[in-house]
Length: 140
Image (tube, rainbow, N blue to C red; front, side, top):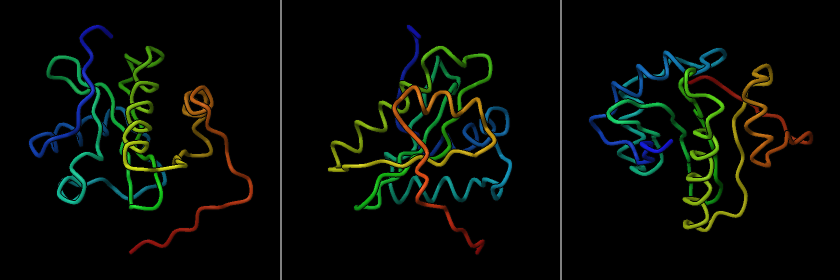
């Protein structure tokens, strides 16, 4: 991880992020990602999308969403060839630091129930499923 840099995404990163998610992200059970959605996120909250970059290559992402009330983590993804090297943990740590600076007191993470590989990193970082709540959705 010596050459790894964590930074916020810039407007010019949109296509690279989309390509990265197609390769590294779990896309089951979600609407397709679009350049427009990422650009809108960047306009609304330029610091929300955190990238792990090695040279000019994206090797990890996380969205650290803050609505002024709650802290939400989405789209944690690490390049398959770079998994189990601390990148996911570094991204989660950067997101948590962002939330602390903003005044957040609790964070939740969107994790697919059947993604056992993802469960390991979340547990290693101190996250647990919350049994009393269910996520309700409605496509728009």
